[in-house]
Length: 611
Image (cartoon, rainbow, N blue to C red; front, side):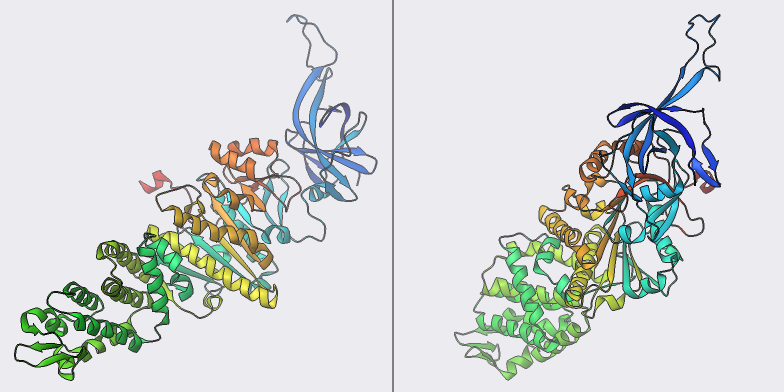
């Protein structure tokens, strides 16, 4: 098909060249041989023809010059009549099409006399990196050409993706549109079999019915709520009972509290059942009783009693232990009642002593409560007694450990509401799309859960792929990613920040080779770790105006050219620059908005609210 000729090259200056246009051609779009093509306007593509080579350029500026009149007086000034003007446009070379492939090269440049034509749809396909055999999704239309914007499935979704834009710019709609179209594609049957998608949703935007076009058979929503009873996320014990994670979570001090936690976790994980647990704690009680002489170790006994109360032992069962000093008299080797009944002899508790102190009853209560408690509650029960053990036997000062428990107790209480320790395979617990909503979670849980879930599913997937090969993929989508991937100190501790970022940096550096892909959406890209930003492969950039955010883009996105960069602050709602390894050059796109199914992120219409 012959292309529409529009002009000829009349000047060349490095990357820039000027075209004398045959006629004004000032229509926004032009119909040519049945194709609707973009007219000549700033930013539009034009093709410079050199035999078999097609040099692709964009319009950077335009002007008109008067060829006939030079009179300056108003009386005789006849300039700018339709027959006296010539339109001149300036082009910037972007690359060439050679052998049906678009290449960015300086090998070919426009030459004076080269004819310029409108860029055809076939040429646009090649420019945008799509070959005839490539499978693609349509997510909207290009801003300038009004041409279907296609996303190549393989190059785009098999990569780490960044979606950025200010509040209200349309990034949530874009994230939804990408995966909505993917799940509408012809590949959905095998997607269900071979891939799993996880969304970390901080604002509850993706909890609507039929979100992503999925129903309850393929989509699961886990609503995390630290204030009310809600859903629980299954986590393997290795990930929650990790001394490094717990030390950071509880803000443990390195010198005294971290060693205590490490020993406690190690001992807790060795406990097989409630019988072992009860034996350990009763053994600790008897050891304390053996050592009591006068007021020695009375504080340890008081602490043991408090620990047993927190473990659910009733006060009545502990009354003899509470009254030990008012009812007993002490000898060197024997512990007796006022009536002379021997309770402890030769450092051994007598049978009468066991009955007197109700040891068997206390032991049964400890067994029962431990067995019925959740794994996290079991851990807290054990820690309370472990504190007593450390103070009693390792001469650790209570003042060093006690402040730690003021942080441990509320933290475990929050975690117990939202986590279930389950050592079965996590992949079997989730559906094709699993959405974890954190809108009603407190700050501690919002920090912890994304890290735990991400590390767990990544480790599991990596282990399977290492053994069996890459036959499935995981796609982790994090909306408002700056909440957990920020590189700035925000009153959550350097250790926490370093550990959290190291996990996600490992995932983004190594995940691609294991079929584990990240999609990050954020309104503040400058707050995200530069290491993570630089490892993204494809970007969709909505309107950004903050200077720090714009500077981050230039330092981490090698495929973003100056023209596209300058468009970012003036993009309209839903408009975006798409760039990355899946695209030969950046493209400005107006993302389609789904009317019936979309995230819960629409702007509030105040006059409707106030009616």
